[in-house]
Length: 147
Image 1 (cartoon, rainbow, N blue to C red):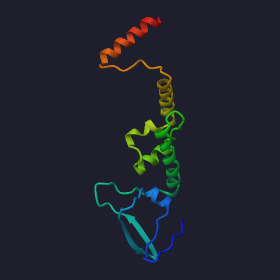
Image 2: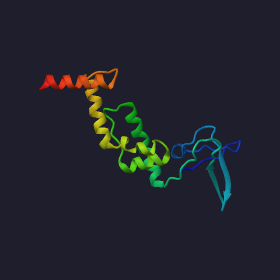
Image 3: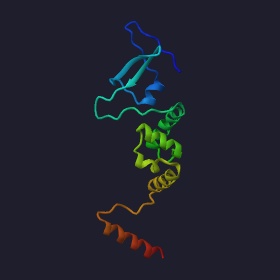
Image 4: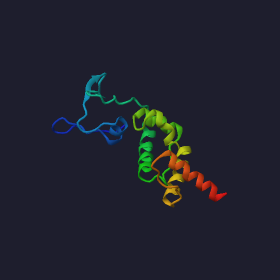
């Protein structure tokens, strides 16, 4: 738990790990309530934006690691490692990735993505094609010449 201080205008700063875990940004609205001697802040949904998911403490710790891994995949596909199945579950729950695209972010899938990207960078590609028929013809010619 992070301690916060009430400022001169009765404002508090929400610690970064909490903001990240709940996907909070400047300008977001929170509901404030006093419950059993505690202040409870709950994100409000005032637009089409989905409400912040409720994550357990362990899911919040996983989420911090997942954010870093996703950024690495986006920045450097060849060297980044994929997520575990448990990490994809948390990322989907938090809205970082689409639930039906969880497979793409797994380490198993990323191994293939790294190999494909390495081939592309090394020039081991068949080219670009204007149609499926053109691609099929190029593949047939390649098979004939390599046989």
